[in-house]
Structures are given as structure tokens and as C-alpha cells.
Image (cartoon, rainbow, N blue to C red; front, top):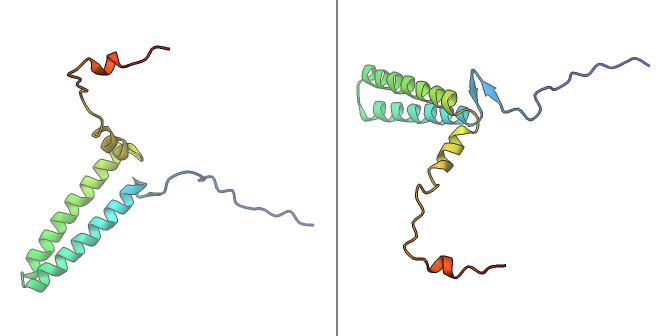
Length: 107
């Protein structure tokens, strides 16, 4: 009986990566490019000259790619979610009455 050689998948539980973008940033870039394509088509259909449409699409696309790569580098795989969650934490908890502390029962 011959020995079989099977490739080992060493990427188990790792997030996907494409050209340096990790996890959800791939989707952000794809959605942004799709929006830029729709904007280009809309501007061209309205009657704006093609050179202006292409120029605006290239500038917008360049800004989009730079921002998405910057967010990917700054926040990492889960950092953007953590940053958005951190915004929901109150900075100060105020209590104008001592009634809350008086009603606490001792064990």
C-alpha cells in the first residue's frame, strides 16, 4: 500500500488577507469601489464630460484605497470594532442623590 501525502492547511482560524488588507477591510474596499463605479456611471449618464468623470473617479478611488489601508494598519483585524465599542462607554457616571447607596443592603 502506497503512502499518501496530503497538504496541511496551516491557515486554520486565521482571517483572510488580500494584498495587506485583513478581515473586514477587504469588504470595505470592495463596497467602496462598487460605489465609485456607480457614481462614475451616474455622472456619465447625466452628461458630465468623460474626462471629468474619470478624473473624479480616480481621485475618489485613490482616497478610498489610502483610507482603507490606513484604517487596516491603524486598527488591525478587530481594532475598528473595539474603537467603535469604546465610543459607547460613558466618560462620567453622575449620581446626584445618595438614595441609591442608602438602599443597598448589607449581607
